[in-house]
Length: 264
Ligand SMILES: Nc1ncnc2c1ncn2[C@@H]1O[C@H](COP(=O)(O)OP(=O)(O)OP(=O)(O)O)[C@@H](O)[C@H]1O
Ligand SMILES: [Mg+2]
Image (cartoon, rainbow, N blue to C red; front, top):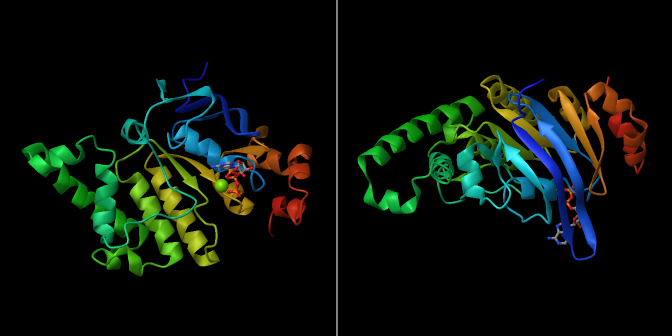
């Protein structure tokens, strides 16, 4: 028997009025692994991760991080338990510097909160010093250190994606969920983001990656989960997913079949 998976999702269901956006979804993410979550537009990828990370309330299902039940747990508590995420639409505090953006990300999940921040206790000062050091190191490792003291507003779209990824690992999570980390990003930046993800993974962070860039997913992931109309239609290693008839059919919209072919 293998040990308990890091993330276990069981029967996750989310309805919007007449529409079942996510329908009885179950999957697992093993500690230290990289798992892809793909599917056509509107197949329920973002909705499912919004539920798992506490940003939306599900109608049914249970999910566990290392055995901790996460259903009905608010996002900041889920982050404190070791699961963080980025958003499909990049979010940054525009007027804050990159270093400050990362430190806010750490505060959002370190359990000290703003009340403790006001009191500025000794443990808090220590944790602030550690956070400042980690923020600097993270900016270095994603290649943004020259903007450390500049406001996030100066960053390009691709650089914002990088900042969001750096922010997601700030509090040393065990699992990070990335929603479309390379959408709309040029090929050089795609390769750079891939390297950054590999580096964080090598440090022990597991990743669940939602992406339409199939090559990116197939290169990075040990396992790929495929959604169609809110349901899981496949779950397996990239080689099997590329040739799965149900997956090919789901992608047979405009350019769909080609999207699954490996680029030479
Ligand atoms: N707040 C909402 N209210 C009503 N319906 C919604 C809402 N959010 C999402 N939906 C619907 O739920 C379904 C799943 O949407 P979701 O955004 O999860 O898909 P997705 O797989 O992330 O798509 P994409 O690849 O385009 O980002 C879609 O039909 C969408 O229109
Ligand atoms: Mg989405």
